[in-house]
Length: 220
Image 1 (cartoon, rainbow, N blue to C red):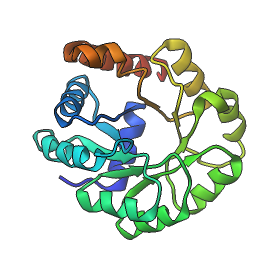
Image 2: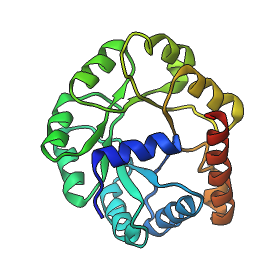
Image 3: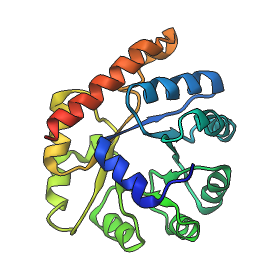
């Protein structure tokens, strides 16, 4: 199943949370993906941080055929050729920790949602001018909620996804959403070392459910 850019944007905004995860074992990565789906996730970012990330991501794309409404994107994409390779593999969207115009060109040529990472007002404005509908604010732990609340009035219709340092707690999530974020990206705080080492997938499902419920309650 294919998705339009607007469908993915709407789903990201509706859920308020995009899990991001990487692993070098296809089976464990699939278990994490399936537990996240069972917990309510419909948009999932696999990050391109391992030597075999392309192979693991390709495996996940095959595995998600059981979940036709799951939108599976790739993160930590750094240049145009890498963007094209993952688009050809079947990625539903592209996320990057940086703002690189050549990636925008490739994504636009393939009608692909591009979520660049930005850390300054200049990068944010340039990303919007290049067509980014959602912008990843990274690293969130360095910039902080005050940066978000300060930049929101300056850039019209800004939609920010905060990644880096977001915790699945009421205090952390409230600070970001009250500042104006439309979504948060969450990795190691959600997929903890203990859960992964013990392969406790029922606990992961529960943790995802609780986090999504918390996000929903905060955003009411």
